[in-house]
Length: 632
Image (cartoon, rainbow, N blue to C red; front, top):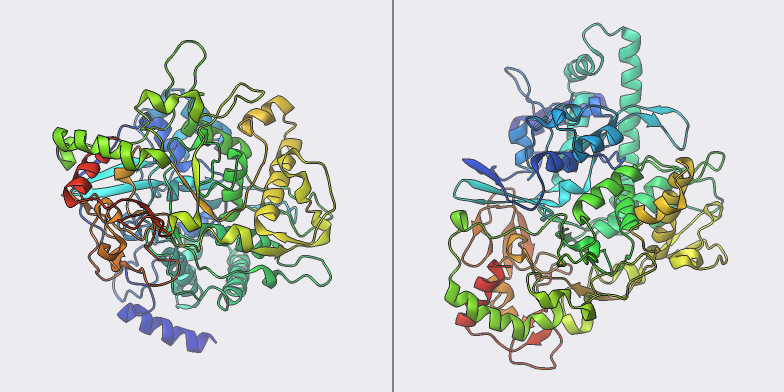
């Protein structure tokens, strides 16, 4: 096999024929982190706090020791973690530390100590991008064997945005990322293959991992572990091929997150399950419904905190996300505690607290307001002044056609009316009641909305999955087949509860970490309408990113671009969106393909038509409404 692979890899490397093409990273003259109520220390902590994940299936030291999957005939081969190379995938550069951070002794510093057991300045020692986090070594919950430091993605990797305009890079915490995780997975796999088969490359890799004085025995052990990892990766890759061939490419800024979480937890995590008649391959589902990464400001105080209005409890949403990006969990060894995991529940709680801030409906006489991560404000000094005349006209239009679903603007006192908030629970907290709109009314692409009501998974009996216990329900009969939504809700709940038990967490603290809410779920074909503060900063639009600008969104479907590309970060402050030029390496969004449809949420003089939610807007009205949306 080696004799065949080497010539193929050499040919690929010389012509770059195997590695996916990438758009050039735009030059950046200056970086501007927009003011969203986080100081630099809090921001840096959030960007690199671990959720306990091993997203990239290699130890941390291996990852930073890999070379790019190219053949270099002269000079040193460039490293995979080169900042400019990672920028081409859309990752945001991040420093090793923030100046003065280690000496400030604030909550962010305490967060580092709790999550890593190390100094703040050591949290990102190799200056990896935003969202890359070190999960410190731990005991494998399935095998009981020691696990070296791992590298995983945190929520910051997908929920930190950046928009470029004439050389200024606007960085937006909580905004949708413009990353292509699929291409990066491919490149990582190629980097591993090159390391294993290209002459001389493994020796260089081993020296970086083990040091120059490593013994032959240590190198042999490393090679055995390396080959085992390649074999497991091939097993999963081969399993995915028959079911993940889809025309709706995820690409830049999109991911079929729900399907991928299900494939990770109920397929990959169940490889080797000792259950007669159970086959983990039965639970793989095709990737057919890519969605853009939603913004995270305000979301902690929604009545349903998941963007599709399916999850009520923040801890379940966040721990489920950690499990979906490869936190290790024991689902296959009944001789060890089932549902024990590497999920760092305490760190996840700290991250949610930083986003949420204090309870916004203060009872001490203070005016209601969000205090955690705030939505970004339009930077007039970079993107241009807001026209006050158009803004005033747009305000009236917002009240006419937007407010009925998206609620009054956050800055409007009417937003805080008790009628828009739930009745206080036993802990004295209320949550913003968002409107959920049936798919037949909103008329947008049905792919994502159809996953939870329809996907089912098979389960080994020893896991004891009992959906009746969800939402504080009474125990019922465990099942071996159920809706994916309820299987995931149960598995995440058991994983979090196991962490609480292992860490002797008092019930009152558990309630606080759970956001003072039960684990209630709903799996229905609808989408929710969220407040539009910061809407200017989250292109492209609709849940699947199928409409590139706000102007296009306010136009009839027939006038929206049918085919365009994403991956460009150059901002269009007129139409409010990103440029759609198709250059090498960008992702083509063909809205005629299922999963990419740009229908629905339409303003057209056709009342009663599915997907038409309001009257047609004149061109001048569209521009006026856009000007007002810039101000939110």
